[in-house]
Amino acid sequence: MKYRIMAAILGFFLLLIWGCGGEPAPEKAKATLVNSQGQKVGEAQFEETSHGVKITLKVENLPPGVHAFHIHEKGLCDPPDFMTAGAHFNPFGKKHGLKSPEGPHAGDLPNLVVGADGKETLEAIASHVTLKSGKNSLFHPGGTSLVIHAGPDDYTTDPAGNAGARIACGVITKQ
Image (tube, rainbow, N blue to C red; front, side):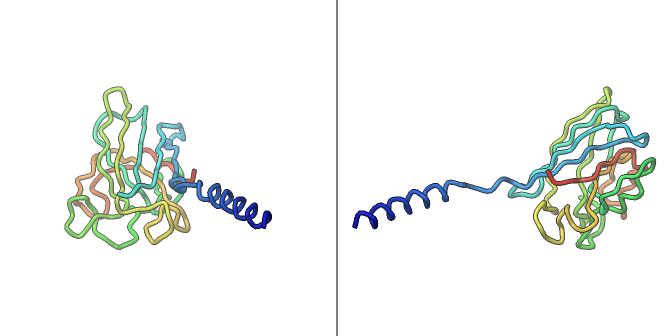
């Protein structure tokens, strides 16, 4: 009888301890962005949320002004032109542009406005991607990258928003 009571108490405490794990830690990722000379110009943090992936981007030593930034389909960032990053991440075959009725690409993001000092911090939600598994996962085979362009995204012109040359790139990796 004593053994049964002790076993029941022990079992209760084990269940209590086992259940204290709480929510699993959110999925996270990061990217270190470099310019065409291979010099670090920024960092991006990615975190899965209930609304999509939150991107916190901090850049420095970039030309002042408005710049497009997008998630690209390959996890490669070979300078000087970063063309190895491929096209915008577009697993669902949509048209480009946050304003496109047939879009957007999963990798389309709002423009980045860099100050006169060459610095900026921006938070954005990428609602069409995930850090979990799935067709729109940033960790699909071949990986993905974050690319900053020389000019602004016009949010409509297919395939890339008329954003100009690629001036910075970072491979997105799990944290």
